[in-house]
Length: 498
Image (cartoon, rainbow, N blue to C red; front, top):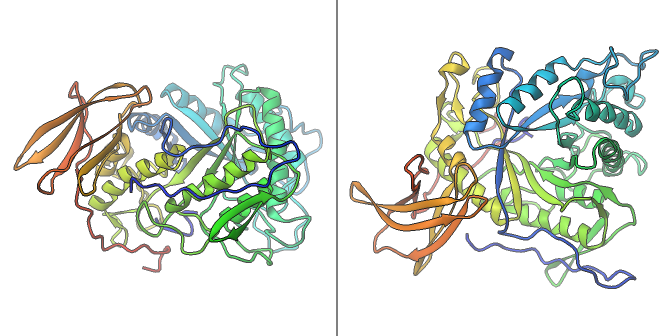
């Protein structure tokens, strides 16, 4: 999505009404708002020289992240060409025609840094695609589910923890933004090749393969981009993410008395342990997409409602408690990009974004990316670090502190609501301080729970002040958070059109 868009304590829950099944009502484990843990990850930048990998992984871990998402291109690992090579055994992780070495190195470095790698698989080799008509995007056209399953059998075995000393990979994200024709096509050329149907076949094949290797492997589906079009009659359309999700999970919606009603739309089941989304926004953390069916940060409760609807009608198959994740999100900053979000505003937004995601039932947020890429040659200046001449000379942005130690303070007429998460997502005492003149004064001591979450209400002060949170042992503190919501000049823009 980064090629297309730059990037209230009152939670609005979407109303979900489901038709009763023939067997009657049943209890299901659905995703609830404002509950559970909030973990974080950072996307890995493989454009850096491999000599900088160690530093990159160590800084991701130091940013409070437990996960790192590594993009794995099937077409890069598999042998090239329009025909599958003679003698090639695609389900064999030791087949000499596979090219694993670069990914072996990344996975090993990630594990050494104490991170959990998420391997995000995308882009098929030419021999595993459908017959071209000449204009399709390479790696995206009708990928074969059976060939995909063989590849994931090989990948799952290679990173099973018992192959040639390589670490285990437990988390597998299936395809990047499959609601976009650039990644999966055609989107809607015919019913048979309709992208959500195609994607469900790929997702189910991937889940079968990975769970056959290890039943504890976690299969992450969705990975949808935030914006599409209302009609997907064309092969090269981009499908709205909520529409795509509903089609994959076989639920339909309609409005009844201004409420969204979900019903079972087919009997097909989807095998997935996590549903994920990339909710980029053309505004701040509460910004919603302008058209229903699209999904920015402010729409994550709607995505949760669709997933809960599918769970309720038993359309999702998983051995796990199904989760909702955000596997890609960020804003570019000013500096270095003069058209991006001012850095002070972005710092506030990052802390608030993590709070809003937790409140929407999201249990993992993955930031894109660790360090800025060069402004003169790249669209991506959303790093947690300003890029220096080399990674060793990078400088941390203030957003890093907000990402590592998120803390927010919002006021109403009588109280200030506080929320935060400790940098290590672990229990401990946290001091809440407010600025009085030039000094910081303690106003409350809170105890973070086992997931590092702390929250409380305190009386509203007489004047507008800054708040912050600080670990009781003095080892770390959050960014400052003002009770006064700033009026921001940044209105959001599509790449290159500000």
